[in-house]
Length: 291
Image (cartoon, rainbow, N blue to C red):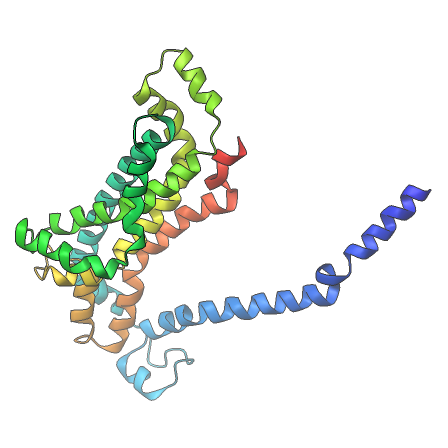
């Protein structure tokens, strides 16, 4: 009897404070407002992208198209952006895959192998994280464009992307690998696995979720990069990437096509984000810490 009374009293206490009806209602209202403000720019862009220039000039942004739905704006946007969009995706995918596997193996060696000066070498490796990226922009350009002569070349983008994203990736993955049980690797050694076998058959499967999360972040950062591709002057449509090219052509298009270009440019990011959401919702990115 006493136990029942105590449970009922605990339930009543839980229904007060943050779990009370008033607090929950306020939280829901706050979340709805935040969601509406977040989605409002996307909604406006979608509406404006199917309007004629006359409708955009004559009516407010909240009105639906009056003179017809101009889905042809998307056709124009695709025809203009298809080449630089394809180039950007290819460059960023190549860079991301190399960064992930190289940084994963480096992090594995730092975490699972013992060698002289490991701590000092690791601190030296992550030291550039303390330096703002803009400070390194000028010397990087001198090395890539002047010394290596990779101006107007895809390698001028890929090599700095790989080098620039290694440090944070190694730091993140080594921290993640530190949560993995040592007993798994010891069992692999007893079965005759060498260092590379342990990396391929034990480390990679356990680290894959965090690699996906980091990969999406790296891909998005490179995809949205404007400054570095613009410095390399890659203006050839067959070699150029999206952001500098988008800035150069958007002013020459009608307003409806401009909005369509913005949405078309976001398609790869939408796809990559949809992939990463699976790992966030399922908590798979923390699987190494669940073991």
